[in-house]
Every structure is written in structure tokens, then in C-alpha cells.
Image (cartoon, rainbow, N blue to C red; front, side, top):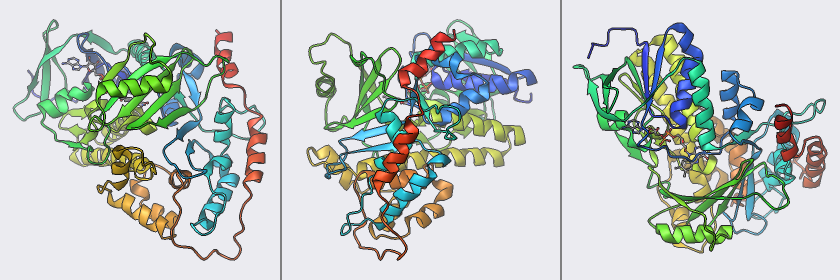
Length: 507
Ligand SMILES: Cc1cc2nc3c(=O)[nH]c(=O)nc-3n(C[C@H](O)[C@H](O)[C@H](O)COP(=O)(O)OP(=O)(O)OC[C@H]3O[C@@H](n4cnc5c(N)ncnc54)[C@H](O)[C@@H]3O)c2cc1C
């Protein structure tokens, strides 16, 4: 193996799941013309995780960056639009049994102000209507199964994300990467080699001999073959904070009326929650649960009962999840991306957003400073903040639950492993303090906007304990006004299924 004297032009991506192909597409699109030689190596004997069908609005920027229009990739991936996520049955407080986490834009400012106004007035002694659902256009779009694409001339731009078929996106990105010069090798890595200085030098494979590279991208999934197993980077588990470590998935057919939801449904069950993700050809469903509270067979039975599939001959897929993150994603000449670098359970569908953030941040800093330690530290710090910021927000769903039906929910609520930032948010909120100010103080560590934090707190029915002295000018906003405004706007958005049909019509 040669010493690493060349200017890092040969990049070897190990792993061909969604993370590997997203990384390949981003690298190839930006760097292939500049002389980088990019190879993706994946094993046909070791499968991909095969799930991961929800996204955040960041995914829009991914395809925009690659210059791929929706009409090209969405039909190929059975993709649908996602206006937000609905969370039924997480809380039991009357009127707060379900809440919706909306994607919103500046065009929601008027109703968001009304929501903030009422939330600020609301406390346990003053029952102001402060459930967020009334105040966000996105909720009405999702309720009415509309696509988040406003007719021209409304002056309103909804933010949105997508749902897509996990294998479809891999195939699409594989094709994209091939046309951008990525070499694809199908083989299994049997050994990883290092230079004397400890950097990675290359890998041995079963059929293609040794493959050398200057820079390595570990996309080997939960195996973490390069970053953890070879370089020995520590994995920090979130198990004490996020209890779920398993999932069982099952597809179901569309609703009989032929309509297509434009939201993810994340319904709490006894020992976790179940996702329902609409694709153009089926629903994807999966129960995410903690194996400390329920075993695999019982979880599958509970999911089947929930879906009405107790007697159906549909095979379920069982998955284990390693929840946490590596101490740093970029070590020496290796960047870990995807499940290899870490995973936060899929409640907010953030994994592919972190893949994108990791690769983009790395590329940006690498262009500025190559392998400089300063930039490496900077990238690692940024990625860790994203992981921890998402973890805190996901944790809040569990902390705020008000279910008493199982130990699982009671233990989640009583969980003492509360991050300092989360503890501070709860303390300020419960005392009726200046939460906006607190969130601003935490801005450099927050992944979710203040609006999202207010939505989850109010949406799950948690309100300040201490009565506040309302400012004299503050008046209660009537949610009926927000409803009228949102419904008026929603009329200018197309039916979801009809919006997707236009792709077929333009073939
Ligand atoms: C239950 C569940 C639900 C999820 N839901 C979402 C969601 O809604 N939204 C979201 O963004 N994310 C979600 N995720 C996460 C998402 O699935 C992953 O982040 C995404 O699929 C990327 O996976 P990956 O490419 O890192 O790993 P994998 O898909 O596991 O791919 C690993 C690759 O490494 C290769 N490999 C491993 N070892 C070797 C070897 N020795 N030699 C050669 N190749 C090797 C394999 O062949 C494979 O190609 C979910 C995950 C789980 C578990």
C-alpha cells in the first residue's frame, strides 16, 4: 500500500445503502469534474437496512443541489409529499390527545403570531385556546389530503418534505452516480489496511483484491466497519435517553376511497409508536419499540392488531437499532456517514437529513482546508451538535407524554437522564418564563426552531404551572380566525393524488 502523499483524490465509499449513494451523488456532482476518482463498494451478501422512507424539508435541497427535478425522481421512488407529522395518542389530556408538527414558512407568520400570543397567555389557571393545530396552514393541507403546492398567484409558499420508497431512492441515486462517473464495485470487504501512521490505506475484498484510496467514507450501516471497528472511534449510546432499540415493519394497501394522505402518522402504541407513511403504491408501517418492555413476537402482534392484519399473510420485517452516535464522524482520512456514524430513532425522520448535513459540511470545509485539523474539529463539532439537538427534540416527545397505561410510558416520563438544555427549556416553560429568550440562548445548539418547540409543548398539553401576569395589550386571538384564514388558503392547493398524477401525465 502507498503512503498517503497524493492530494486525496481517490475516494472510496464503502456501503451502498441510502447513505452511501447520497454521499456518492453529492461527491460526484460537485467533484468528479475536478479530477476526483470516486468508487462505491458494496456487498451483495450484506443487505441494506431497507427502511427510511420519511424525510425533513432538507431533502428538497438535496435534489435541488443535484439539479434533479421532482418530476424525474419522485415517480421513480413512488414518492409523495409530506406536509408534516401527526402524533395521535401520545398525550391523554382532554383536547390534546393528538398534535401535528407542521412544516411552515414565513407565509405562516400571521397565524404563528396568533399562536404565540395565545400560548403566552395560557397557563393552568387561564384556559386560552392554544393547541397549535388550529394555527398552521400545513395542518389543514394534511387534514384535507392536499399537496403542499400552492396555485400560482396565491403568494403563499408552503414548506414540505417527501416520503419515498427506500429501495427506489437507492436505485435512482445509483443511476445518477453512474452518469456522474462513480465506479461501482460489488464485493465484500474482508480486511481493512492501515498506513504506519494509522490512516486507512485500503481494503481487501473477496473477488476484486485490494482497493486503495486516499479518503474513505464509511457507509457500512450499523456495522461501522471503518470508523468503529477499524479506527476504534468510540460509540456513545443514547439508550438511557431514548429507550427504543427495535422495530417491526409491514406494508399495507391504500385506503379504499383512493385518497392519499400528505402527512406521516406517528401513533403511540403501548410500548412505542407506529409510523404510517403513504407512498404512491402502498403504505409503509412500522412499530418502533423498546425490547426492554416487549418482545419481538408481542410487538408484531400488537402492530398487526393495530393495522387489522392479525390473520393476514403479510410478512413482517424485524429490525434492531443501535441508537447513539460516534464520538466524532471524521477521524483521520475517514468520514462516517449514515447508520455507521449513528442513529436517532426515526420519530422525526431525521437520519437522511443528518447524512446530507454531514456530507455537505465535510465538502464545504474540505474545500476550504483539506485535511486541516481545525476544519476536521469544526465538522465534527457541527455534526455532534446536530445529533444532540435532534436527540433532545425527539426525547421531548417521550418526556411530555401523559400516558399511564404501561410502565414504558411512565418510565419515559420519569426518565431522569434529561440533557441540560432540555431541563432548562422545561424549567423556563413551566415557570412561565421567557422561553423564546431561552431558545435564543441555545440557538447555536438547537436543530428545531422555537416554533417547533412551542408546538410540541403546547401540542402535548403542557402549560406553565405558574400564572403569568399578562401584558396589558395582549388579547386572546380567536382560533376561528386562524382557521378561516388557513382554510381559505388551503382551497388553493391541489388534491395530493391529483398533484402526483401530473407526473404520469407529463411522461
Ligand atoms: C426502523 C427504522 C426506520 C427508519 N426510518 C427513517 C426515516 O423515516 N427517515 C430517515 O431519514 N431515516 C430513517 N431510518 C434510517 C435510514 O434507514 C438510514 O439512515 C438509511 O437507510 C441509511 O442507511 P445506511 O446506508 O447508513 O446503512 P445500510 O442501509 O445498512 O447500508 C449498509 C451498506 O454497507 C454495506 N456493507 C456492510 N458491511 C460491508 C462489508 N464488509 N463489505 C462491503 N459492504 C458492506 C452493505 O452491503 C450495505 O450496502 C430508519 C431506520 C430504521 C432502523
